[in-house]
Image (cartoon, rainbow, N blue to C red; front, side, top):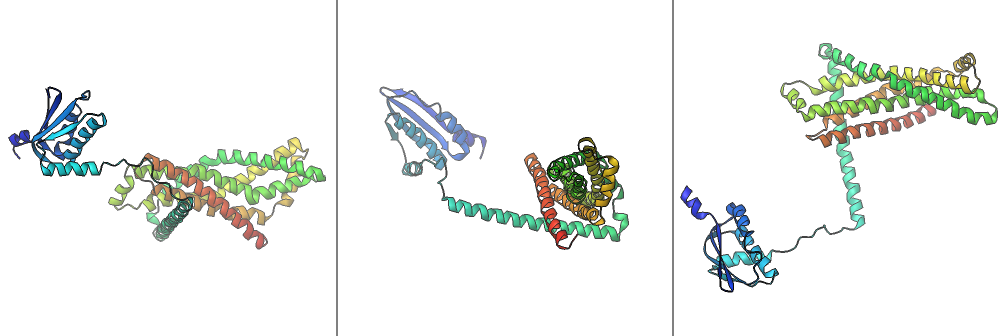
Length: 382
């Protein structure tokens, strides 16, 4: 289409008063290509007119559904204000298009129709099951990739990223010592103080030492350490890998044939599996030390008596229970944190959601596994 034809096709609107009536003349091409221009011109059509209006359509060259809808809407606005409208030069084709626009001018429901509560419940449950199944399948596939990379690293030690693993061991282990120690120390104080308050009723305050040693070694040492690491390191894994997803660094690694599992996930996985038993041992010592301090300060149990009683209560079974659970909890935290990081999509909202999910899922799995181990070890007599 040349420039002159484009000018001739441009739609136009002219208003000419004629006695008691207002002539509104239309011309050009009233099509979707010119809809923006048509809409702007129609907004200028006399809004304060209260007399009769004549629509002169003899010079309209082309009209499609969009043009007919805009013309019909203008006519409808006049009629709603009580202003009569008549047409001049309206062809049967144009009249048909305007009739179709009027036929389909139906108000849309502001809110969707309410569905029965039972159907919504079924849909929510079904959607949750499908989502959980898809997430489980994705997680199992991710675990398989990590195990494959772990075996490959064991068979080809030169491919294992030792420097990155040592760096992660410092981040997840050494840097976590202050917060893990503080929490463990305070928990040891709480256990000793609350336990002594109950045991005093039976004149058995000395057994406070046994309770502190038993509870810290078997449960609280590993459980609180795992929860702290899940909130501290698990969320960091998700945030770091998720940020790389947002900046398309993971895609760039795949393009360069660099495995993200070997480069990013495996060092974090190995570091956390190695450091969790060390952190657990440290938490056990500091937790028992907290019990010693409160026993000396508030229960008149001297440090020498506390240590003597603790040695009697200390058993290999109690000590090993926590250490057995430690690497398993470390593996769970690392896998969940890295997997959620890999699931981040291209938005900051997705990064925040998956970081929260990694912490919630890791803590949930830790508590479930801890309950399982408690039942299992009791059944086998440990």
